[in-house]
Length: 453
Image 1 (cartoon, one colour):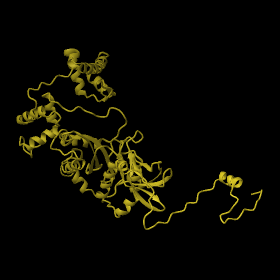
Image 2: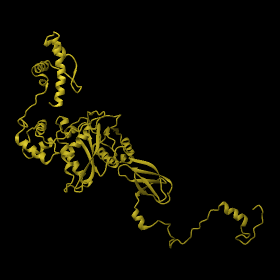
Image 3: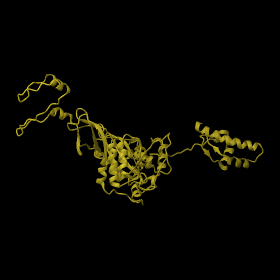
Image 4: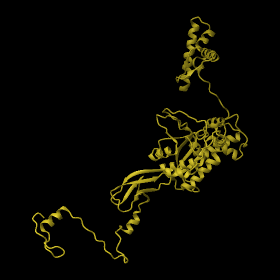
């Protein structure tokens, strides 16, 4: 007997033993069963359960006939994997799982409709297909739920009240290049607003995606992020503050869950990303992948019926929402506000570091602290010199090595006048001139002798 069945039988026996003890005391069986049903019970896992009179009569009768073996669950013997699914679909699912073990049950159902194994108008129960796959011992995804932590679900009533975003790493192309896609989803409708692709999860990638989402769909109230490397920088806080967006990080003190974007990532892997790795037909450049992912987002995912929305597509729910969108009025003015000022010290070789990159500063500022500003959207860097903004460029070490050091300009043919430089007179020079100075002036006259001179 399996251990789980034995534990269940033991917990049922405890209830039966209490009933039989009351009967032995002189109570009627019906009265004893009614009294037991009124008390609070828990199962072998500590979960509260409700006992029905019908089950108790059945347990007492089974125990009196077969002992504790009668309290065990009877195994269900299935002669077929499924009584409701057509045999051709079961054979197709077996063949697909053998060739593609990572294919999910909904994906196999969609493939069967595309290949006319089942009619496109025919509804196939996902639960029935899953149970059939389990009976046929086909590979099924394990449950990867959160095992610890206080995570709660949340949902907003209308569109653009909350946007959720996260990055998903994947590989693409023949050379399996590392890439990350950062997707922005509307919380209320699961509508995909924008997807951006970059080589790493960075603040620059997030800022670009946030700005493109903000510019296309207008203002939204809040954005929910995790503590990834692209979301915890100072620029992220500044950008959200200047755009008027409430920035929320999923920390222990704010335990709302992030499950919607993670569920989307699972769907994205199944539908698209897993076909990119090692595929020679996939262009691994970030812009080419971004076009593919935004096509999937707008043409496939947003238009597919969503089980979490009562089989309404995210696009239909988003577009039919009664809350009006808030488009931005003056984009140029907002862009001008997205500037961050910093104080930086220029090195002796006229270099200033900004965000891990080195920028070359014009001569004359070595060792000084200068005001440097960086635009959050395009990443351009300027420094302020006498009220004028001068753009800085990354240092080109190879160019500097070939062209040598900068020197003072030489005298030209048009201007032959020499600049007379008057040297500074130090205290030591003054003392020497006082004690050993000349006795004849430049005009030939003798200086008047003065001991106090």
